[in-house]
Image (cartoon, rainbow, N blue to C red):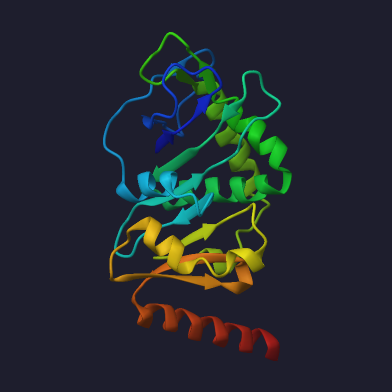
Length: 233
């Protein structure tokens, strides 16, 4: 999988710089090793989400694409010295890897301070590095992956967050009352194109990106049928 860092910290020589590295989930013990960030190609949607102030947790996949991705933002380590600003993204073509990570991160939001600590451990400060200002601790990434694998064995991702060809957009710091009227704002920020729409999904307290009204209506009809079946049971 490809992991993106868009992190910074107080006193960084360069501020926020988007970089990435390749992580192989089957790799053996990587104690002591470091990943050097690369300034290479970025999925446009990931870069846009990093720069969009209207959302801070995004996951899913675009219609007709075989790439799944998760973005976590604004997990700021206030208890660290120096203060760290943590923003990461995970991109994979392996559905199982995506499901494992998503289970771990969704569960992690139940204990935000612990989740922040896990991501903070990724960062190795390098003030002399004027390009990124940091390295990535390979063993911390590996431990996080192992933890996600364990969590995924007992944590079931809600079915309504598993629909393919949808992007789920959360704003964790806003109440749903404040969040639900932001569809147009998010749509404009993401520059998704005319074929996509952003709609509020009240049951999950989030927004979703779907391609075209027809696909969205079909998903709503499917949800209604599933609820009707469950009610009859």
